[in-house]
Length: 101
Image (tube, rainbow, N blue to C red; front, top):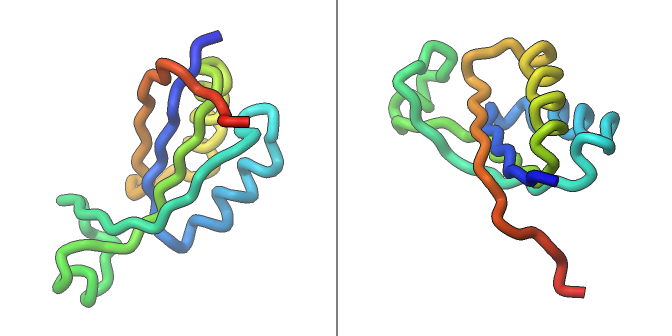
């Protein structure tokens, strides 16, 4: 079993919709972490005037540790569901994963 960490950075307003997608498919994402973040991108067509002045926008960062095959399936689903330029993603290898108890 090869584990990866899938990270998604999306506009804050998409947070609840992303969570719904994960909860509907627990076989892909049985657990996840949500973090509020701020981000900057040179692709700023959708930023408000306030965000343009601040130079950054509020984002939600989602982190999920899952099997590599499930990550690919989840990514394919999310790309279809959220065909937006302002949702960024990346995969990282996970060396070990566990719980203290």
